[in-house]
Image (cartoon, rainbow, N blue to C red):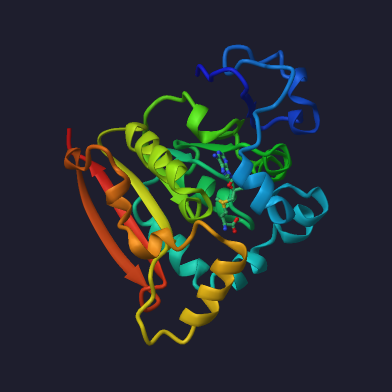
Length: 256
Ligand SMILES: C[S@@+](CC[C@H](N)C(=O)[O-])C[C@H]1O[C@@H](n2cnc3c(N)ncnc32)[C@H](O)[C@@H]1O
């Protein structure tokens, strides 16, 4: 594994998550070990500090019932739909941490023959997801911006509710980066928001929440995820919507 500068990798099982990144000099074959962690993107600092970077809030929010509540009790179904694209024994990249038990559930789903690589740009998130994956020797957490992640191609990339949180230029970059991370036959699975049907009882409240707290989310109401890809023709695309259109699963399978 050959991560780029400004990233740190935490293999598991490990007690390393309590150590500063510069202490991880014992894993040079897996990652470079810069003195400083990766730069926090401005959208994360400015818009999402309160929920993803503030350590006290992270401790409060990183719970299964929080994800279930935010996703209107659809989280289990959405997670199941994502996992349905992933077979035991496969190598999986999760490009950002997810609150609750998503990562350990995924590690359990792929089993000991599989491998899970979770990436997150925020140190507090890396520590949190790392502690949840402590029991899984087949899982590693990388402290880096996903755009700087130089890990090998994977069988599956599972991008769960990341795209709606990033600005448009990041949406393009992340989609294209993730599409590069699979070999022919491999899949990139996106689960995220989608424009709900006009009559959806939660459309108005979702719209207000997006306008107030999630300024980049409505782009997914206007654009297909496929439209962010530079070379969509190399993939077969399958999209399904869930919960009267409020959510979507898009699977891009690399053909060549
Ligand atoms: C995947 S999303 C949220 C998923 C879901 N809403 C939940 O309940 O957790 C949030 C995570 O993405 C991470 N993140 C955002 N931008 C990132 C980037 N460019 N590279 C790596 N991680 C990123 C944040 O640090 C945060 O931990």
